[in-house]
Length: 441
Ligand SMILES: Cc1cc2nc3c(=O)[nH]c(=O)nc-3n(C[C@H](O)[C@H](O)[C@H](O)COP(=O)(O)OP(=O)(O)OC[C@H]3O[C@@H](n4cnc5c(N)ncnc54)[C@H](O)[C@@H]3O)c2cc1C
Image (tube, rainbow, N blue to C red; front, side, top):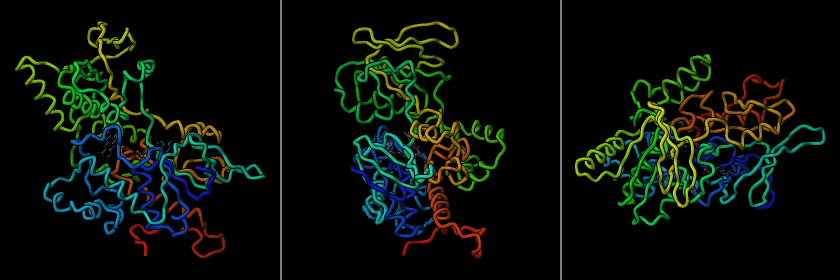
């Protein structure tokens, strides 16, 4: 990639920015969509590539795709995708609202290939964002640098690069071949020879940890697989049709305008609808497997609950974990061959965003209702953040649930800022937002 100039640059070809691309194609002038580039670090579009295991399902309805909640007539819907690949009959017959993860992934890739105006380039990892300054010192754009030496200058940046993997400091010094975070699991576990006996320890007590435990157990028939967690035991996700209403895109307004203590309560009470829980089928499968193993005296699965890992070190070719039992305070060692980290994601803004904020002298990153980062007056360039605004926009912000509507809110905002009505024009108080649901000609 050499140096390019674009009006809009979106980093990451995940659901967030692909949803934005769809909204731009449907709602924005062609020349703006045509001057938009999405840049992805990998060579293709895959959804949750680290945990793209064949048997795993999405946890939200297929109707919460990139567009349907905003524009049910769109050619970019999940149903259009199924129709175009000849699987609509079978999907209907399956009678499920929850597609397999690999179907969502196939859908995202299909959307990417169906874009007519927005361009997507692969194999470019963004490494930094600097300021492009005009002669008067005002910042008029962003200078985005890539690992391959390429550079792109843009006026509007949209960061939809997901969250940073959380690798707790205790595991940071283990050699790479001995520790796998869930974001790399699918590819790296496939490199292991399944036959030899080995000891696997999974860290964490939520869905990704349990999926890795189950996969290791099934894939390595002679492995002993333990899972170590701080909590009292594995739990199902909490779900209720009443609280599921808090995932509606329309709830974002209520959350955004709520008082701080109410936001805290909402996030606290909703926590186990999305985090620290398991899908009921997986929980059941694990429990039945453990039951059967006890019955037949072939125990390969082990749950270690209420336990902290305080250290991880190598002793020859073995990993030695130091465990502290929270009930008794007793310290013991657990030796293993490989550690799988189901430790989730860092609970703060991604490093790329924090670095950008530091470059413009902003200590605490905040976004407005339309996901536009609050920047000093002397910055005449915009930056939108997707998928990292749970604290201000609610628990659904990192999920598929809201992103069709979020994309149109971002497009409306950037259209309004692109052509602000002049002070003497009629309707100058009312920027003309793009109409949700408008179809391209
Ligand atoms: C295992 C797992 C399962 C999930 N299941 C569900 C589910 O069932 N339903 C649901 O609603 N949500 C689910 N989620 C939440 C998930 O975050 C969202 O579904 C969705 O993927 C968020 O989209 P995104 O575009 O914001 O981020 P991501 O999907 O993370 O996409 C970010 C993209 O940016 C790219 N990128 C990152 N850094 C750079 C860089 N520096 N330069 C260039 N490209 C970069 C990445 O390669 C990636 O393609 C799940 C999350 C995980 C981890």
